[in-house]
Each structure stands twice: as structure tokens, then as C-alpha cells.
Image (cartoon, rainbow, N blue to C red; front, side):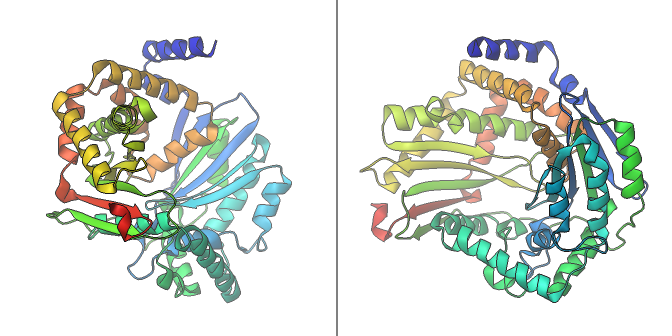
Length: 447
């Protein structure tokens, strides 16, 4: 029955244009103070996801203050003029809801998932902390120690994370995407109350925010509540133009090794600078999305998995990855975990041969058709997750895209040709725009 259902879902995808599916229950509006809002109706259950996204992330930080965006995310759960420290979370829990927050390179977000009749309460509290945050020196010291411990546990004590941090810093020679989201340890240690408040006052304002509400709601009611609570907030006059440093032409391939006795499984990974999804021009990113799936997105059924794992048996894992959701240039990556007895150099060489052969031979049309069907079906299944849908729109709107771009994306993916994919591969696989990293147990591990 499950196999039949998957096939029927694929058929439905092609009978109903994806853009129609995407736009059916989506409403947008904008308040006078600049707050942009998206409402996604879904009345199957009496629940709602309420999200506030800010168009500011780690890549918007002032040099020397790395980690301030993530640090402020932690501090936002302290008190306001109306709520005591920790009371926000207590109220959400007392109303049977869940909440969390997140920081990325391009955005910071806060969300709650509650019964739909608690939406007004969430708006009241979230709008309060958008401009009513109160911080003490004790709050800052305590939370700074929490962030430092988070960095210790997730990065300092994780060789893979340290390796990733070094590779990212090598890939971006000038752009702030090379700085870790959590921040460099020595700069986190120096962050203070004034740093946090300055960042907060500049960026946390309705004209820099996106409200996303998904679930059992009436768009007219959402707009009325948004005007009542968010509409009274003042705009930020100090909001800077969102313009980051641009990468210079990269003329030389970079290579690095990282050896650590704690490494459980050595591997080779290469990242290339790659174009991101741009408003009104998403075809290059769509071609790269399909390229990643063809090369290494489906385990042993992918080109790299089939050749390196099944046929040659030189790898226990091989894959490719790409995410175009980025305000500025992103990256495309390939990875191989060599099998026992295969050196990192041999694994890298085998991976490069497979990629070169793929570009020369072209795309297998049947393989591409299968991937497009799988993507189409996953688009339909994804609509069962209200939080996932809300995140899709919030992430897009804070990364430079529009509601129309989100709606058009499924159709664009389905329309990409084999020729576009090969052209995208030739464009992205330029060694001067890449960083190749070897993670190993010790310096002898390479051979």
C-alpha cells in the first residue's frame, strides 16, 4: 500500500501545478512600521506555529564581535519590563506549548507551537521582547559562560567541528561566512552587556522582522492581532544596508589537513564556492540541487555511491551536498570516507575520476526522472509539517527571496534540463574556488 501511495502522490504532483499547491493557503501583509507577515492556513488540527525572524545573523556582525548574534539569541530569554527572567518560557510551557530559537549566518528566529487559541498570548509576549528586553551584567556573565560551555562541548571537544571551522575559514577569504556562527572563543569571552544591547537596538525592530504564522488561523484575525501588538513598535533608524564584503577572485586551490587522535573515521571533503538562490533567478541553484542529488544525495543509488561503494568498494560512504538558501555565495561539497586499507589520497583520486566521468558522459535521464519524482513527492509530504512550512518561508524571506520565489521553486526544479545540470557542474567544479580537507587520526593516516 505504501508503494502505491507514493506513486499516486507523484501523479498528483504533475496533475496539479506545484505553484498552485504552494500558494493555495498562503496570505501576506505588511504593517506600516515595516513588519512583513506570512500566514499559512491549515485547519486540520487546532494548533498554530508562531515565528518571528530577524534579518540578521552571524554574517552581519561587526568584525571582532563574532558570536554576538547567537549570544543575543540566548539573552532574549531573560526578562523584559513585563516579564521576569525565564517567565516567557514558563508561560509557554504552562499553556502546553513548545518553543525554541536559532541563529544562522543570515537570520535569527524565535518560535512557539501552541494551541491556536493561545496565538494572541504568544504575539503579546514576543512583541514585548522585540523591544522591551532588560539585561543586567549578571545576566550577561551567566549566559556568556553558557555559550562558552556550548562552544567547548560542540566545537572544542569535537575534532570534526574544529576541522569544519578551519575549512569554512579557508573557503571564504574575505566574506564573513568564514566566521563561525557561535563565534571565535577569544571574542566570545570579550562580549559584554553594551555589545548585546547595541546589537539588539539596531537589528531587533519590526522593519527588520518577518512574522510567520502557520496553522488553524484566520488571516484577517492574524493581521488584526499583528497590528495590535507588533504594529505599535517603533522602527530602527540605525538599520544598516545589508551589504557584506565580496569575495575577491580566488586564484589558488587551498588544501588543509587536520590530525587528531580522537578522530573515529578519517575522510576527505572538498567544498567549492557556488551560487545561491537569487530572487527571480533560481535556475542555477535548482540545477546544483539536482546535481547534488544525482552525484551523492541518495546513498548507494547515487553516481558516487554506486561507483565508489558498490563497484570499486573503495569507500564506505560517498556523497555530495548543496544548499542554495543563502543571502550570498554558498558552497557545494563532496565527501568520501575511504574503506579499510584505502588511503585518503587514493579515495580522493577515485572520487575525482567519478566526477570527471559524470561530466563527460552526461546525466542519466532515467535517474534524473526518478529524483524529480522523489523531490515532487517530498514537496507534498512536507506540507504535513506546519513548522517545516513556516520555516521554509521564514528562511527564504530573511535570505533575500520572496514569497513568489518559494512558490515557484518546485516547478523550477521539475523544469531543469540535463544540459543545465552539466553546465552547472562545469561551472562549480573549479579547483581554484575550492578547499580540500583531510581529517585523520594522525599525520601518518594519509597513507
